[in-house]
View: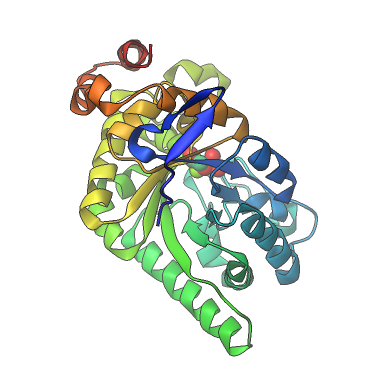
Length: 322
Ligand code: PEP
Ligand code: MG
């Protein structure tokens, strides 16, 4: 469950955060913990575990337990969301000796790779369960496109739990979630919601896949538009589906750290924004300045979703944030 934050203070401004939204940090390893603390993140909404796998050798179960537990323990009583391996696409792991693909972003990436390498996945899932004893924690699966993948991943997750429990390890209560970053999953959110405790919207990939624009192609930066009304419209739809199903939904892509978009996310019912720690003060500031009474929650949502272009969305958002 999300924390109740109450009053928050920043640079002399005290008040409630718009929508009581949780402001969490994205991390890649325990080395990021000083920043999490410095910028007063309310937990970790995205722990990108793939960095552990990018060396010459794969990390052992013990190394993984250590890396995950350190972050979980440091963030308690707030929650840490551990994302399972997201290798492929732009990230390579020499130890995995992956074949070259013609379209890596559309290829054997993330959960697709884990389901094809069950031994690597099993070790990671065991480590996550063992680390879950260190404090409030959650696991999430990246690059879900279909319900079948989710069902299969959950089966492996609970098999791993049985194993470690049988071996006598303590385990915590682990929330289970998925990233919503493929348009088909976003569209199918209602069905997927029945299988999980939460959604986390990955706007980096959702933008890439919705606009068919390689997120790393410098030629196409103008077309890479997280503010595109179609991207924001589908986010609103996912949030509605989550609310109806009684699960929480966060945003953990770069857009989660965009102070212009933050009031819109709060207005559509997003419960957590997770971002690079350095973005926290600016987003917190934006959300402290506003109340739904002053802004008009539905007006904000309607105004944004009525726009025809990303440029129009940005102009409109500026009027609300001031
Ligand atoms: C995303 O796609 O928005 C996301 C948070 O994941 P990553 O950037 O690691 O792909
Ligand atoms: Mg992603």
